[in-house]
Length: 253
Ligand code: MN
Image (cartoon, rainbow, N blue to C red):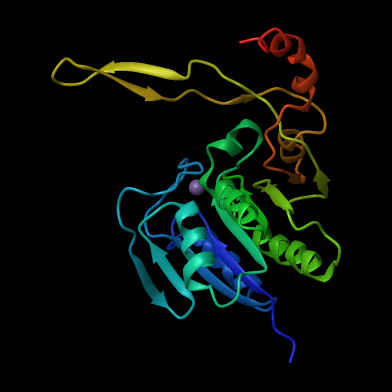
């Protein structure tokens, strides 16, 4: 008997969020879906791993688990413990409430869950949904099913496949393969005073995007689904040449 693909679903909005419910439902007929996600919202938790306190896992229903930790904790607990009899074939994260594009992917718990999947040797895909009045997760859930069905049906995809998918709020016309866009930061810290006269700070500001063609931001802002292939090798390969002279001078130390 052929084994069905095993799909681990996680997110950073929490196990009770609407986006993860629709995603898990949409993937249900593509394989064995197991949901392991934070019990509390973990948006902007980045690639944080909990090492200084114990983690608790709660079984909420069959194949649904809540963890009092980060998305990265969830992927580790799922792959290295709950599903240790057979590693998942895919890690799918989302559908996030809000876009995760460009420079923001490094803060994103949604995308970081896929970083962790890739580090554990599992092909991983993140889905994020633009939020606007009257938006729905349903087109994104249908798109996720279509894309993951295609990935499962395609042989020869690299083992470190890592895709970051963003969907526009008002449905979509077409799909673009993109690169990460660039944020323009404006007034990003606000200083105020608390009732006891002590200063406090809030990281804020409205994100603006550099209007560059071929970016995830451009695709979503023109009503297209953006798919950005990512990798985790942060090496600056041009830097190996650029800094060669600098380091050459240090070799006598
Ligand atoms: Mn989130």
